[in-house]
Length: 336
DNA sequence: GTGTCGT
DNA sequence: ACGACACAACGCACA
DNA sequence: TGTGCG
Ligand SMILES: [Mn+2]
Ligand SMILES: [Mn+2]
Image (cartoon, rainbow, N blue to C red; front, top):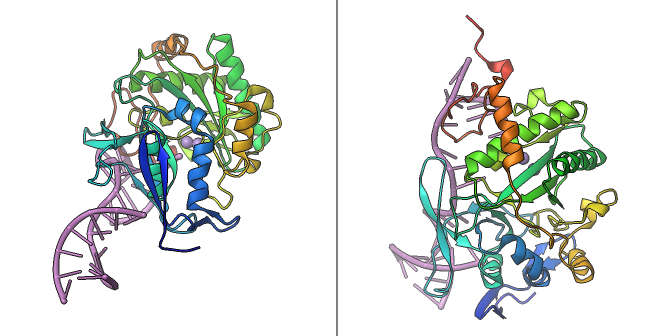
């Protein structure tokens, strides 16, 4: 627990300083900042396959999981670390900033040293910022939703996408939900990917209204799994594969194979247990190949042709064409 | 956690 | 040399 | 001005 020392790691051709390596970040198990760095070293191969080359936002906890936190998007290479790579990212209103690019593990560990536990990842690469090459299907549990229901929702989505010839891959979120990822051919922008997500969510609610909902307003969801299409809005980030959550055991957003769906337990996938999984099984997402979004875009066009509107956008975004009033039904101004 | 400023 | 302090996301729509 | 949503 000596405070004054520094661990220097030689990674990807750079010397990365880990200051206060013995500082406890996870009091429950006693895991330190250096333990966190070693975790990321252990999952480096699948981590870089998932996150490599993408802009990332840091979620920092300089005093560990029990301390205060903040997000950091803007990064500037310093005199001490001139090798840091950044790229321009923009916000919904057009503001531009320089974000860190996860070009190699040195960049990851530089962020870890800043107290970054996990990364929020852009759905595009620094090399091709105008195409979203991932559709992220975010399954959010409403109150009353159990994890077996989340599992059933994932299976339902896999079946629908499979019938359209689209392959998707699952991961835990590190909390109570699941994420399914579709790797896309780089042919569509964020508006198109979100439109596809809206259509997919609506179709799934039609198929299983007892289990699934595409309702943005909480009051309309009930005890159903919300398919959060808005997580695909342009410029939105998602908590990344292999990133560590700020909970007592450091649960990991863990990619897994479909045959594990019925047995996977988010609680048991932590920064302490996941490295062994990776050593034994390798990368569960190794078979990802770019898919076409066209079947879902056709579904969206059918919905629009039949008179449906777009769905509400999240706060912060300007009003979009064909967007319905952005207000919960219970608060909407009365007719006439 | 780091960089800067004032003492 | 040291302590205090600032800073580290998104910023619109609607009633 | 408070509330919407992650
Ligand atoms: Mn979620
Ligand atoms: Mn969500």
